[in-house]
Image (tube, rainbow, N blue to C red; front, side):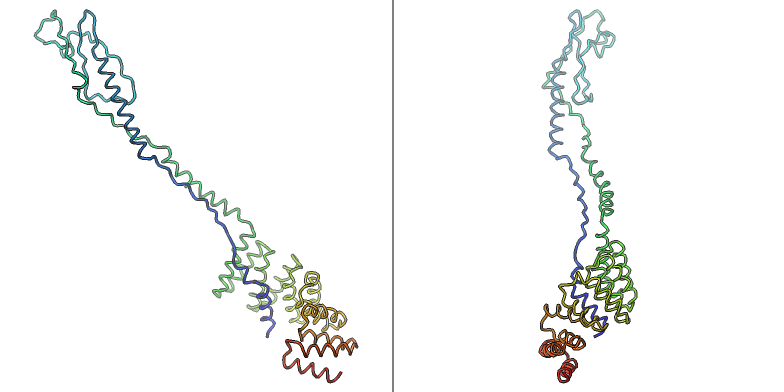
Length: 354
């Protein structure tokens, strides 16, 4: 299995794909609905106008018979087409004293001026034709114009909410975008989106892991190593990133830098058996067998049936001159799990020689 496939499996084991879900909350506040005047209020308004008009009509009828001096009654002329303003008190009737106005005085033009004028007969209020209530234009409700304000102000509110997204939220959006692009096979665009996510939030671990795996798959190991170094400089506790970087360095033949990478993050990986065994293998390759034995021992305490690690400890024990312990380690390796046919043959050969 190639080193690239091993690193991709490491990314899958650390749950990179599980972090593709999550949030984003446009909070868009709902614009308030417009409130219109209920039809019952218009009916009540028309009823009030009609009552006021009727009361005004009664008041005019009672104040009609105005008496002038010398006990001469003058007729009250009503303009049946008079448009009365709503809810306005009627002015008092004035006595008409111009005798030459025969139509208003109720006189016949043939009668001499010294003959007293006949009193005009005023029809009873019940016989008068009803005066139609003046048409009142319905007032414009203040609430009809109100909906325009919330609709206008909702755009700035939404823009403010978008502006208030944190860099972490924006980075998560870029990460999700990149995940979709990867599924569509658009690798170059996915890499650009992941790089943007890390510019927004350099501590976005999932984005960094995914970017590393994508760069490796695209055969860009130098860019992948640069991404890993940046992540470890920000947070040395990312043991998974340290393992991937050490593997890339080892693939290039950089054994010493690979060891330094693992040792820097070792305080944060004491509970990871695979990390300890990987470090032990590099120490063994560097000829530091006593340190390798110790790291193998810690890894085997966490996973005592791993045949490969028992074989590795046996090699370092044999190199350090601890033959009885080496024989026991090889025996445990042969009885353990994970040995291929080739490795099993190697262990049997070691046992036969010792």
